[in-house]
Length: 262
Image (cartoon, rainbow, N blue to C red; front, side, top):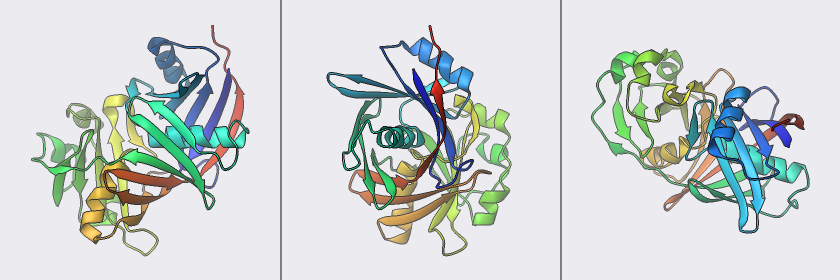
């Protein structure tokens, strides 16, 4: 089976968020896909299968299946266009655990159409402040994650979580965010998900399904520029359109080969 490694939400190799994209030659069960994802040990491995009903896309982190994955979807769409499996002007459409998702090419970027996941104010769960070693200005909860607003970009950069404590909090992950300190972006974030085997994710498209409505309310505008402050770093453009979020990013293929699987 064809296998690609793609760096997503970046225009240069060895930055952004790496994902493997596996083009399945036949149906495979969840256990097999989870085993492959654990072996490859990337933040996400995407499995794509063509069937008469359309393209079925699944994503697995090293220790859990993902219900929604932005960088895995971006990487998969990039592979389809780069390999000629899709024409340059054709949209990519996927049936996924998170519903029907689409991707289009626009002005040198790949734009994903994802569901918005707005947060609601929530009391911080026991142990969250101690796990982050940071004082929260605001705590909210979306369908998947806790969102924690900090006072500044520097405060976001300084966070050094206690991952053992974070792992005990009942949530997919924890987003920390603040306004950006310069004119290159509107807001910044980091994302921690030890419960699914990823202490710090490099660039998290699905977290921006929550960040887009949050910061749209704060700024009073629907189009925003975002940076994720992981060591690899990543850049996104986000646009809130009703109950949908458009996530735009770039991608680079790092390598391709074959998966020898029984």
